[in-house]
Image (cartoon, rainbow, N blue to C red; front, side, top):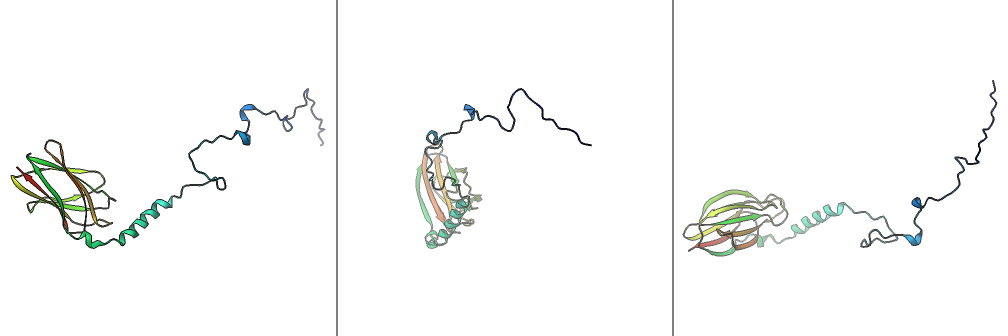
Length: 188
């Protein structure tokens, strides 16, 4: 059975498929001369405008650093280091320690006059501190490198404050395993 088809007549000649091309001013495309520079400080080459960050560069720089570390003269880290002498009238000093390079598991031991005060301190990028009571006379404070972490040598930054909170000493070390850095604190 055939159904007769008769086109429907509308009052307007507008078709959904053939609409007039009236540009909406809000949807108007930027002309070449109206281009805005949204990132004026970005140095993007016109030849290659889609330049993305290479996420591997971070890891490559770390690998290259480890390669450079293998070329280090390890013998200079195998000698004891004298950090300095501090004269103090207070009852104690506060000692702050942290790993000043890559936190890689460096461990140290703290001895005062050849007596162990702290058996093992793990150095991280976050500073750790402790109060060290002083005896009259010389207090020889040794920081012994127990290891070199995963990326030698054993690296640390040390800051010493007196009991009044005044900075009295600051230093850094790079030590091989078993080597020590020494502060001599003289209590008057």
